[in-house]
Length: 316
Image 1: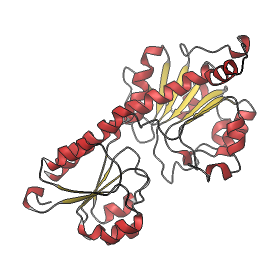
Image 2: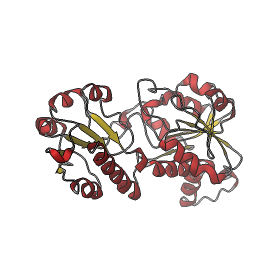
Image 3: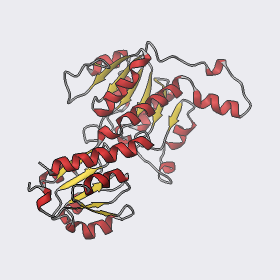
Image 4: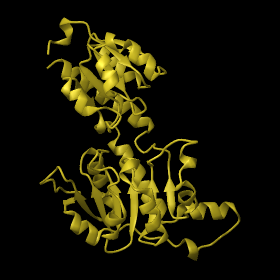
């Protein structure tokens, strides 16, 4: 790859990103075309003029767009997951893909632990009842996290951050990662799924969405846990069969569930699913609108990490 200083390199940025990204790349002589409100069709009509493309989660980078991007050398994803990008086709076209999972892993970990503590201490129902004039102490008796076993599925940036944040809670953290081995550290012990099925009191997912993980969590998966569990998903909604989770909630195999992500997101589409009403009516479910990795701090850190990675790749 020719050093970018020796040729023109223009980035099309199709989503909002912190200005620190621009400071980093423009200091190296790159040109920015910042179009955060651009539509897919508009981007497709001009993408042939750019060497780099910067996206977040809302913008779909499919084979059609890639075919039109005759000069494209780099796709930069401001965030962690790359399921909105046709990764295989990008690689086939020799387009480099970079992302910034390091930028929001602490945010995700803190958010999911917050949801876990909400479930264990019944904060959702307790808050609602006090606001309605009810003072029910026994009904809102909570559980302590100390002494419990937390299973992490996936031990990349997010899984490791979750384990670090859990360290001070006096829990045993077991981690399973199908594509990572020998990773036991001061914060988590590597385990196989059988041990997690046997010991976990709480389960948290930190895996990408792939054909392999699509609806990984189904009736068979949930039936293998030896005891009732607390269930957390802050990765991708499509890894879960919602009907299976709802049945497990109703049958008390899951004693509480927290979702930052859902298989269908945003309204009105979410409200039209056949599982939405059962989900929101469940008192032992905590929901948030896909914001676990989206904090004031992560907005800055994602952009900084991505800018630094982009400059480093172009200097290779």
